[in-house]
Amino acid sequence: MTSRRLLAVDSSVVVAVIRKEQDHEFLREEMKSSDCVMSAMNRVEVETVIFAKRKEAGCQELHQLLVEVKMTIHPINEQMVQTAIESWKHYGTSGKHEAQLNMGDSFAYALSKELRAPLMCIGNDFIHTDLDLALPRHIIERHPST
Image 1 (cartoon, rainbow, N blue to C red):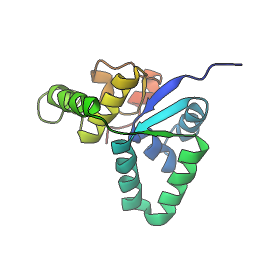
Image 2 (cartoon, rainbow, N blue to C red):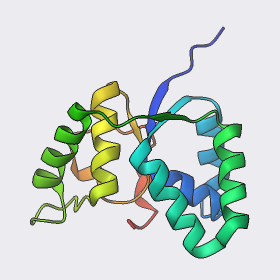
Image 3 (tube, rainbow, N blue to C red):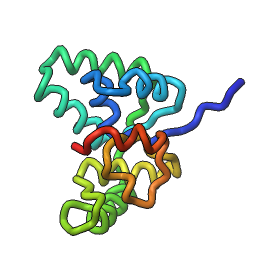
Image 4 (cartoon, rainbow, N blue to C red):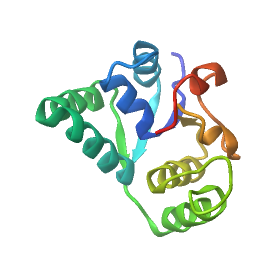
């Protein structure tokens, strides 16, 4: 039996799959073949983004995707809060760092650190952090950061 890898998942990936953006089929298959975990904060974030554009139909599609890929939602704990705050102070939109992580990004960062798992993300923000990233760089970089 092949071992499945544990991945922390940023909301950018889930949004890209729902919106059927470039690489959406690849991203879906990567999630299906991995043990995927998303922070509770990112779970809220992804639903609000999808609802804003696609209303309830989009949310139903989101719920189906989360079941299909067997996404685990990780509760936020005090250590994650502290890590998210520190990541935002260092890499966040508050300063001049290239990463420009927003609050949701900071929780994806914290989850990746807590689980010691690579982060599955797209866009040009996390490539400027110290995280281990799950996807090939050429796929990550061809998606604009949101």
